[in-house]
Length: 111
Image (tube, rainbow, N blue to C red):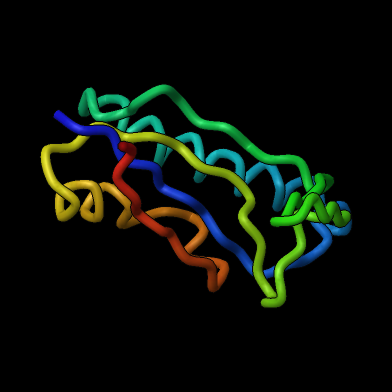
């Protein structure tokens, strides 16, 4: 069985302005979805939520504040899953709460 990274990209917005009850409901949705993958024995190393702060190192030693890209979405978090094929890993990505917020899930094999 291989491991795949599911990278969650979402529109850039300020979560600090989201009401507490909405954040609680969203957290529950994520926990239920990841829990469903874990219940199938398909969760890899776990899940990680990324900070909004960071740096980007580019060729030539250029360092910028980041993790900003020239699009209107950001990589918010990721998990690793276990699957036999890319297609199976893609099936596991269905139901991801990021999709409800006009986000996307990038599925990549871990080499």
